[in-house]
Amino acid sequence: MSITLTDFARARLFPREPRKNTIQDCTPEAFERYLNEHAPLKVLDGYAPFCKLYVYYNWTSTRCLTVSITDDNRHLLRSDYEARSKSELPVLVRWFEGVEPPIADYLIVILYSREQMAKEGTPVDTDWGIVGCMYTAEPEETPMAPITMMRNALGVEEGGSGVPIDREAYRRSVAFWQTHANWRG
Image: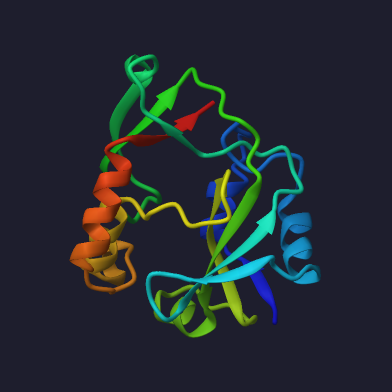
């Protein structure tokens, strides 16, 4: 099996201006090489047949991406309209500023099949393309954000994947994200 770090994921996981809430102590090339040289601890099914989640022990100092919202940190939540790329429409996002989560125990790499990558206009010459990564305390998937589910349902032309919303998964996502937020350093 072969894996490629896509430009989309590279910009988010290894930005030109390093941030504390992205992958630490690892170059994009070393990250891709590690994934190709090491078997995951386990493989989880993603939200669609073309999506797999490879779970690895965190070999970096990358911190958990998600923080529980509490009365003590609620005042640190921020929000704004942002787009993930120049071609996407901005959507409302929220995050913490001024928090320092623990180092993640796991990196959960989000992979799309070669066929899906081609469908979305980003062909890869490997079996899988990396589209993202979760940094977690548990070897389980963090629920996809509700806005990401909506974007996916809108289709490839709007930056999604064309997968319709699963109403129960959406409700589980809302329940999680009402009590959690990502952070920025």
